[in-house]
Image 1 (cartoon, rainbow, N blue to C red):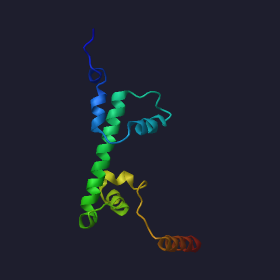
Image 2 (spheres, rainbow, N blue to C red; image 1 turned 135 degrees about the vertical axis):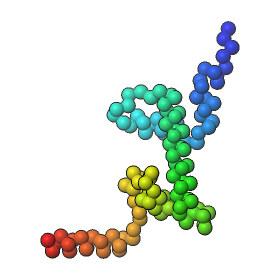
Image 3 (cartoon, helix red, strand yellow; image 1 turned 90 degrees about the vertical axis):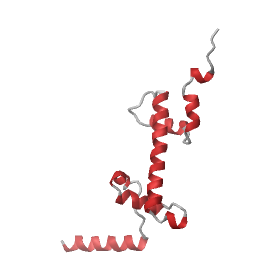
Image 4 (cartoon, one colour; image 1 turned 180 degrees about the horizontal axis):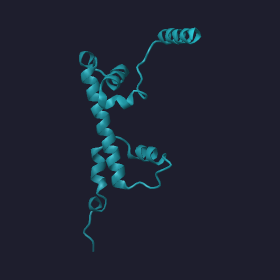
Length: 119
């Protein structure tokens, strides 16, 4: 007779309580890569936990460097500014571009077209 409890049989069952992100979504994202054929449960848990910690770190850094302290909130522009100004998060600048007004974009586009015409 085995005296094993479900928690001993599945070491990740206790760990699942320590994460907030849905493991099924992370698994789906991981499986979307053609290079991934199977996913170890420990690797899935660690990837989920690392992602959660990264998002928390990004949010805290953005809150501390942004306007969040005054308004007690975090905005998209705070995230974009942190991605642009902090070397650690610089790889996110394509994902979190700074928002600009449409009129500013159109003005920049016009200037670029004028420069191309002059050449």
